[in-house]
Image 1: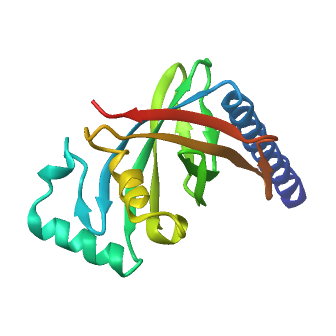
Image 2: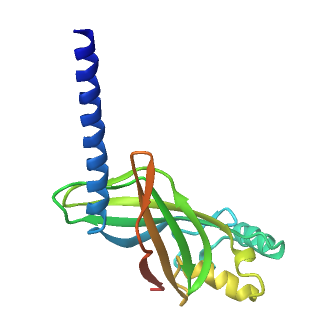
Length: 197
């Protein structure tokens, strides 16, 4: 009798783990039908100065201009922001991923790469928001460029000074199926041009 109980428990555990694997695989398949779109950039900071709401460079106060100038002169000009991705799921079932590798380009120049290591689920026939936190030294990435080019790249993301910035992010989602990581077979390119108003 005890052996039958252990045998039955083993079968139940096997079936449950198989169902979980099937759900994970189905979530990955659903992800292949999803649309990715850049919604916006938020919490944009240049050398620690919040430049999210500026409509012109002249709106930055004197102390903040001094902080940005000092950072630029020391070749340490951190640019941080959230790149907010909309994930539209047209499917009747949830689409999911466990990890998202990304490569960021601004004005056709590769800036950096990274990963989002949090599980994300896009609900059926819904739209989910996936923030990608970006943080890098703009002076280092644009080494050899003029100071004006460096500043214009940052300002073109957020202001109305006549600058514009083309942003592209390449995405490669992956999921866990059992103990194995399955990566999407190719990079997805998501583009957006932030045009000054």
